[in-house]
Every structure is written in C-alpha cells, then in structure tokens.
Amino acid sequence: MAQRFDVLGLIGLVLLVAVWQLLTFAIPLIALPHPAHVAERIGEDFIVADYLLFYGLPETGLLDSMIYTTQNVLIAVALGATVGTVCGLVTARFDLIRAVIDPVLLVLGTIPILVLAPFFLIWFGTGRTSAVLLVAIYVAVILYIYAQRAASTLNPVYEDAAYTLGASRRRVVWDVLIKGTVPQILGGIRIALAGAWGLEAIAELLGAQQGIGKIVQVLAGSTDMEGIFAALLVLGILAVVFDAFTARFFSYVSAWSVEARTGGG
Image 1 (cartoon, rainbow, N blue to C red):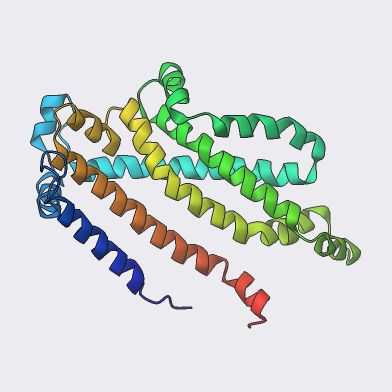
Image 2: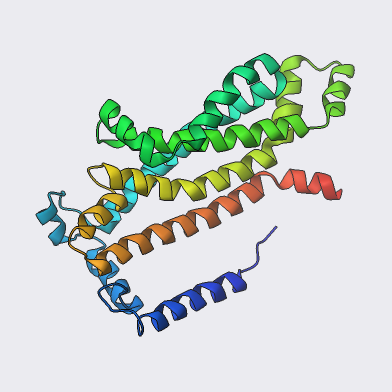
C-alpha cells in the first residue's frame, strides 16, 4: 500500500521554524540563534569542523559524528530488542520465570540514565561499549513489556486450535505466538528507536570520545549556541528520517496482519 505524503507533518515543521524565528526577536542571539545561521553552520561543519581539534577531538565533522551515533543506536536497539522480546515472550508463558525476571527488568527501567552512566563508564570505559549497553538496557525494558503484553493478550484459542490440528510445539511458537505478536512488537521497536536517539546523546554527553552528544558537550563549555543547535538539529533530522523509514518498513512487514483483520486478499 502506497503511503501518502504527510502534509500535516510538513505544516507542523514549517510552523516550528516560524515560531523559532519569531522567538529570536525576543530572545538574545547568544541564547537562541537564527534558524538560517544554524543551517549555515550545519553546512560549514558537516564534513570537517576544524575548531573541534582545539577540544581534543579527532579531525571530524557532523557527518562522522552522525555515523558514529547512528551505529551505536542501531546496535543498541538490535541488542535490546532481541533480549527484551525473547524474555517477554518466555515470561508470558512461564509464570515462574516471569516472577524472577519481572522485578529485575522493571527496576532497571526506573533507574535514570544519569545514575547508571557513571557505573558503566567505570566498568566499560568511555568507548562505544558503555553507551551501547546503556541504551540497550532501556530498549530491552520497553520491548520486554510490549512482547509480554502481546503474548499475554493473544487469544489462547489460536494455540489450542493449532495443537488440535496436530501442530508441534515449535510450530505453534513460530506460527502462532511469534507471528501473532509481531505487530505489537514492531510498534514497541519503533517507540524504543525514537527514544534511543536521546538516550544515546545523553550517554555520549556524559562520557564518550565522539558522537553528536560529545560535540554538544564540548561546545557547551564555550557557549557556542549555533554549534549546539546545529548538532541537535542534525540529531533531530536523523531521528525523524529513521522513524519514517521504520514506519514504512514495519508497515510493509506486517501488512499481512492488516489484511487478515480487514479480510483483504
């Protein structure tokens, strides 16, 4: 099914930029730079930002930082979604395992990243590992809840019917449990991905060698608001582009569930 162009979304973005421009007349430029100036800064710093060398960063620009942050987010979402989905589906069918795992994951999900970050930086250093694991934990909690809820609310009549028709346990798990929960799990992955960008930026802000969050950290020390807004705008664009791609891809993957509900062929 072809997706229509999101006119309302475009209008919302135009209004956001318009409000931003209007606010610059009331707020000093040192605190809120003009949108045009931020756009120019993105163009200037996109490939190489020489001034970052003075902050001890390698010769890099917004593009390299985008790639680094994107890699971390995708790795963390893949890892966290896998762990969270498997644990959620298992605990939905085994109450004893659920009683053990539920408190652990739910407690981890309530701990702010600002509290966990120092421990991860000590244990795993300031490289990629600590940031990825931090984000993966929160993604795992989200997918754990989504997968568990999807499996728990799945009508048991489908599994009973499959067993009655002679299906093996493995076949029931794959054809009924997993396929029946896919639409909700994909929705959970999309939500987790949307939040992962901000969590990754915070993780990089607290301790990293590169990335969008690292750029924000070093520029905050010199109150370079144009540079900070440029980095944040690039991060926001990344998040929007990946969300649109994810929504389109997941819609294609789970199209069969829509057809099944509507009776389409």
